[in-house]
Length: 420
Image (cartoon, rainbow, N blue to C red; front, side, top):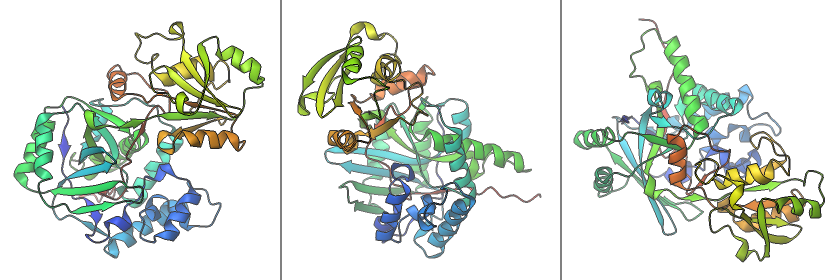
């Protein structure tokens, strides 16, 4: 069963939340981070993308970057931009994007449960990205970005969340993308106990987004535990920062692909090979949106095509093979375009659905890529099925919106000890 715990969160002062909170570190590049920091000197990107305040061209993984992140974290605390709660709390984080609303619980989740697969995964991680997060956690002594978890919806939990939202929020503001962010603090001991008990009846949590952050938290846990002669299991490093959303509130958008070349094929030869596994229908941009599973849009040489996967090109009974990302990978990207490993191949790029289908056209028309594919979004049901089966999705299978903002709540995780 899942065990969630309250913690003494570090969060923005009452009048600074809108200035401090930032987009996640991994949805932008250094150039974009520099621009955002230039426009807002209080942005938490100064901690999560600290290289943006150093000399141009610096390696984002250089020791100086992590040292700068640590220095900036101390500055945020010293100047009162971030303030620690005096007692352990849960936090209810509500987001409203257009007509979509999602309500999550900010908790300290168990590293041991992650390691024992009570918190299930669906994605492989890369050692270099893991190491970056390990270095960042150790330097700042904090988990600055939450792992996005989901669970099968519970009426009991829903009722507890509704009770928490009946009070005055600690923070409420609208970001420039139109998303409303609201945070409620749950500090009453009886409500905290009720939430812990409710989640104690939930068998499994699922990582929706944040596999590298979770893996890094587990590595930090291993390091801290091995170095702590008085380890008790109650230290902050035993847990990681997470936000838990019920599965029926999750919004997954398409995660599209762009490829730099046709692997040496002419357009005619390429289309002939595609036709072996897909029906091909010319169409307009509007009519080529992937509106059903196993339908794909393809943009090539200023023309849109609708691709429909042929029934014999995948196994409908296999939860992994029937994923649209798998169908495209195994029947087109790999055999025709030579993308053996989309996780590492530099010829393929990934475009989140929030950018819209016009972004695919732009990337191809400007010449950086030669062909683009739009996909139907992976369902939360598929994510849970694959996680339950201990299978691994292809990389970049899901794009969740709205994105959680960093610094809504930070989990401090010092890893320094003195022999007693």
